[in-house]
Length: 165
Image 1 (cartoon, rainbow, N blue to C red):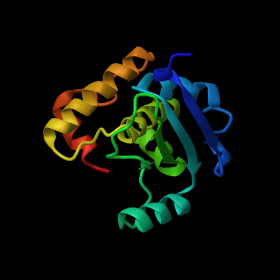
Image 2: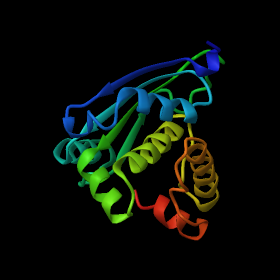
Image 3: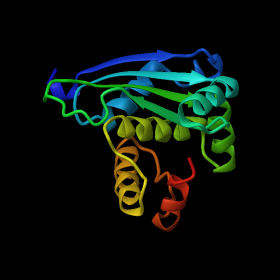
């Protein structure tokens, strides 16, 4: 396997509601589609209480959010074969609620949030409009390659949506 595709992936379900529908093979395919190099990642599905505690403790925002990315070598210059290391936390309650509000399946929204988190782990961000547009276009390309539709619908609303979390 080429080094750029090397992936060590742990999937954890302390909130087990999505264990049957969001299987490790599906998640692995979504992660690999978003990888630009080797990675050691954990994807963890949590309930609202754990999601809120993590967001409060690490971002000083006292609410559960859809996805949190903890990139452990963020900002480091990595050797070509050195993996990106990160934990990506998805809050099942927020994921399910947002999917319903957006008229998407839980699988479709989860794929988007996982791709989004993997891009964050690799240094992508959406702090300003230019970064947001670049990241959203990349997300859209990745998701379309996986058979999902544009997660933002139209680019006019993309910046607004990305800056919400």
